[in-house]
Image (cartoon, rainbow, N blue to C red; front, side, top):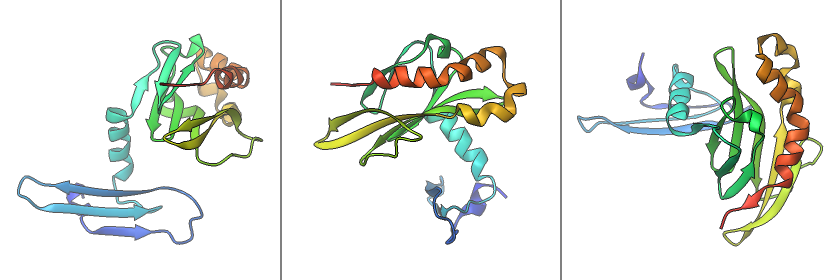
Length: 178
């Protein structure tokens, strides 16, 4: 079953309290249109296609300390260069490491319309963007790596160990791009 089998897929999980969804339209060379929709339900092969598209369109290698995305500029730790990638979409950036041939988020950058609970998120500022307030937060996922330390390289262990302090430094230097 390939992409053609997705045509007409329209499923959702009414019990899900949070999650994600997708809408897809594809036009074939013969003019036929394929349509599929899902909310917390996905057709077979969705994860593979999604991961491939993210790799092609929304993931970039961190090569230096200066990073700009979503109208913001940040200064990242030197240790991230060559060891961390950024996966972005509108309003969110996940900073990831390759752990056991799978990308795993070590930190997130969030742009929100409303203030967040600051227990889990480090505030990086409130900015005016397109006539509205935008609240910027960073979050470390260092704790989620404890069970997997044996799968981390020494450099990754160093990055994870420094995350709490690094997140505070990054948050204090977030700047709005002109």
